[in-house]
Length: 505
Ligand SMILES: Cc1cc2nc3c(=O)[nH]c(=O)nc-3n(C[C@H](O)[C@H](O)[C@H](O)COP(=O)(O)OP(=O)(O)OC[C@H]3O[C@@H](n4cnc5c(N)ncnc54)[C@H](O)[C@@H]3O)c2cc1C
Ligand code: FES
Ligand code: FES
Image (cartoon, rainbow, N blue to C red; front, side, top):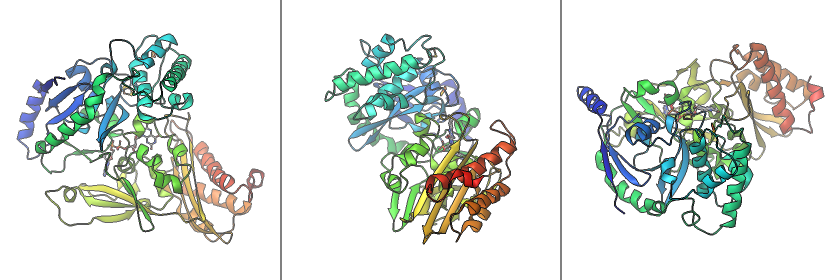
């Protein structure tokens, strides 16, 4: 196969490069990746979103722009990264995905799935009436095709779950669900066949692992300088909603987020999680699943699959939203974060500094004010592994179950010894200017027995520690009531034999 090599340097980029050359900061790297079956080399600004690059520079207009905020899924694409000899594909929202994040990867737009005839997934959508105006359809086809590409066994419920980031305004979703079920039937009947021979993927997919390996060998020499850029992008799911126009005019750097890095490890009695771990990494971690059997269901309430595939732990902590879900979870494990100078993380400027550790509960000084110097990056988070005597619970209430941020969320860790609370940590989100660690509630509950009167008093103290505001997610009264009920819910769920609801109110 002949690989077309396309080089794009737009007029805008040249102007931008000229402007940048007056500064000491070099933020440009030559960006090379494979898009569908073509190799791309470009020097476009690294914060350019894939959505814009595909549509404006490559004229691949099948990828649609809907909300530009990660909510609708019209812009969904696939991104594949080499892991050993295999390419691991994930769905991502191209409207929030900077091109600087896809260096050395395989980007697949809807055009990259096209063949002479329709694929079984495309055919199912047509035959079940799953498309009307067609605006959302490319996103649905990408997400559903990704389901078959990333699973070994197929069932209709899971196939529908993989569409949690796609919204259709015309069909009402029933026809799309039928198309998902029909596709599942098709691929179950063709088990054992490769996805190329079953007609899901065009033949060029077979060459992608070898082509990415070749590309990897060429990337190193393109590097920029190790200077702290104005913006440091993790997954970009907050930055590219809040500041995408500014990013496009600034110097940006990318926090390393490679698939092959071991993101979650155990060292002695501690679990250490790399700050670049995504929600997907965390909810699929065998280590975490062993200690928190509910973790998959907790984090399935976080955004949608394409958001979870990008959203990092470091970004969740530093964005400092009072309702941040991962922060809420790890606050209740009394986690510590390791902050290092960004310069010490680069290969050229290792200064030997090991960084400093801060308890997550002490990291938030006020609304979006952090105990963090401008050049500090969160390297990792760690927490003590829970003992067999401990249990954990997480609750999130939002206006709709999926793809919504919390009105109030709370996590709860408790260790019981001889029927007495030996250790306890409780977090509460959406009820203060910061992700809240309930310090007074903890102090009250330590060394107490679990009894209805104690729980009622603990809930009262928790509410007194909170200071919610009225906003789109609820009034002060509502949020305080929610917090009280959720504290009850933790106890009722974890200790059903020791307490019942009637005794609490
Ligand atoms: C549609 C949608 C749904 C969402 N749903 C949820 C949800 O249900 N729950 C929830 O909690 N959040 C949700 N979010 C918010 C967002 O996805 C999370 O906060 C995410 O964890 C941010 O991580 P990121 O890597 O994308 O951050 P980025 O946008 O890359 O960065 C955010 C900030 O953190 C900084 N940063 C990133 N990594 C580091 C690091 N290692 N060290 C220092 N600074 C760092 C960046 O410089 C930036 O200032 C949603 C967002 C969208 C768009
Ligand atoms: S345009 Fe709506 S999710 Fe990207
Ligand atoms: S077919 Fe029109 S938005 Fe889905």
